[in-house]
Image (cartoon, rainbow, N blue to C red; front, side, top):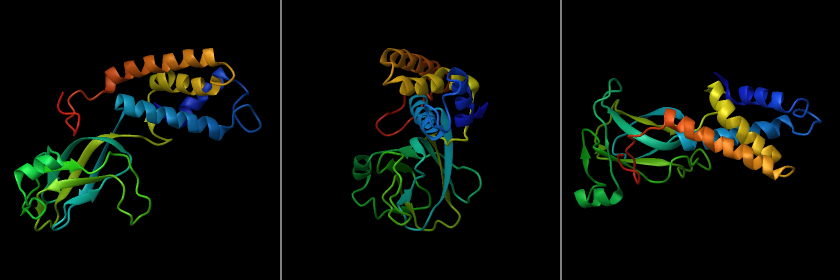
Length: 221
């Protein structure tokens, strides 16, 4: 295991000796940006990075902001007093809630039963007070939240220092980056590298893919 950017760049340096760095063919920042683009691609294709977020619930509140690193939500747990989890919310759509209660926005209770997403995961807010990023809606809202929390589980993208196994770097990130670096000067070679990237992703997905995720639009497999 090594940090995704540092580890992958070291492997690329071996393939492209003397060509990465200041005043060389490919700048460090350019190569690092390509590595991260590849890592995000692998993370989405292969459900590579798992993440959790804990949200403090509020009285009479239906909607909460989601961390923009999520690219998929796999489950939502309820913690009534901020301690142990006490049940998993059921995924629903707004149509499901409409059928359940015509006044569901006004319904209150002691625990939420359902959740839905108001946008695709992974959308950041445009500012700290904009509330226009990814959001989750829960039903029912709590009349008295006190110490209650939601714990969100899902798939996310990582950062440049996220530890990643050496074989993922070798099978996926190195060929992805090589494909981008070769795209203009040697399209045939770039195509070959990209094929290796896709092959690597298939192997990684077989290892990390979450086969039983239940989310909106996807359903239980």
